[in-house]
Length: 105
Image: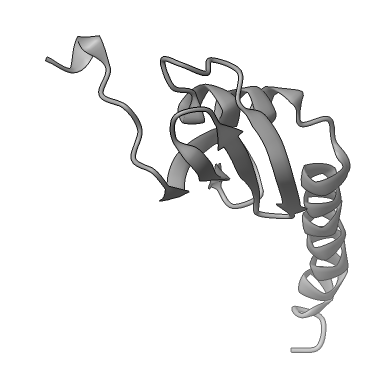
């Protein structure tokens, strides 16, 4: 029985190191694309390039506070599709509601 646990014992540290590496990548990698997604989501007709006033990154997500003319402070949260991997998706978490778009009619 001790022999059957050998591969599991060998794989566990490798899996944990891989998960740690993915977490470090999410925190320290260039997030220009995610920042642009958050700015686009928070934008208003009066302010198409909101200013990021606060940014926080952790292994499973990022959050932003943006100052938007006509809407005030807007909070945007961005997460990966599968915790540590996958496409980024952002949503407005707080602040003023987004302005309705012309295509929503």
